Length: 281
Image (cartoon, rainbow, N blue to C red):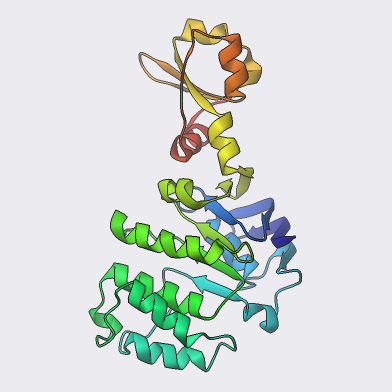
């Protein structure tokens, strides 16, 4: 079963548009949405949440989004509004009257786990504490689906690790689902099951994360050596003044065919750079 289904999504803002965006997010998994700033990640999320008008077909938790389904969705945006003049406890009391599944005990558990000061108003929180507060509020509503837009941007590694740990807890029963957009791909390499890569409003790939990292590799060679390589292995090429690097697919088969070739492991960051700045052979 899919928690999110996006088919042929189209949205135009004049000089920018999403075109034929299609992907699914399986229930019980974490999907990482990656791409450069301005690639369309936030627009996709806003369409999924029905915050903007769009063309195409989107289903969330089995149906078209409505007020009933929204009760089962937790959302964290960078600019999501929480009053800076309330304490975290006061915010919890306000939200408990809004969300039908609000879990005060679980809310207190997350607040304590995140070491959030309970006697300070949010205006006195650091940026990392404010992000933790938003996540605590989103999770305490006991959603089936958690959607986050750049939640760990600008945070130090320790705070990001604490947040990722909470996401692991949320997902471990395989009944909950996360869609998270981020340009910090190292975080997604730790937690994501699937990766959807968008560039300039178009989906370039949507695959299992492990398949991506195991299937692709970086070939380092000379221009003459590249000419001897079967082009079906080559996804993209980056040329520097004195060297050539190629993103290759079917890495294991490539190594068998070219046992003397130098092939390095690849990261999600490197895959992004090759697709955006590399050229097709």
